[in-house]
Length: 184
Image (cartoon, rainbow, N blue to C red):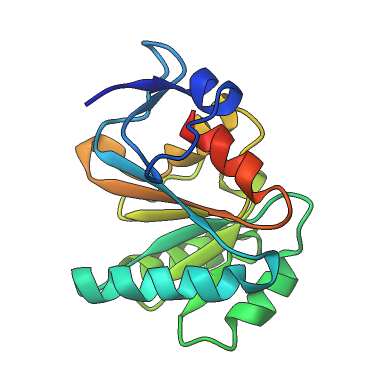
């Protein structure tokens, strides 16, 4: 299986090839584990929630259960995303509301582990330092700005040798360009 550096992914593009990335690395020392699969899905900006929910439900059906982290771009509204997601049949929470108080965080973590919460929505900043080793799927609603950001975000799943999946939802006018950036 060929390895692709993150620099190659973000600078050169893949062109017209399947939308699965085999391995991602920034250097020998900064490598996303081989146990993590990488995929992107092209969609419109106006239907990202529908595409995400459809993919999540497919994963849940295949595995019997699913737990996911969803990263919203820092310029996007978590509350808007949450209100769209509230219309779907997925138990979800906004991470920033759960980490301020240690007792609230412990309760949130327990609910997330046992399936009372299936999906947690946050930004890159809200997850720093937190470890969700039981989460198998990570959704990115925007293409990360560089390889280091992708590496940091992808590292939230597939921890300690476990399998994980990173799904990037690519929407809007820059869809082809962003897909090319990931395919490099």
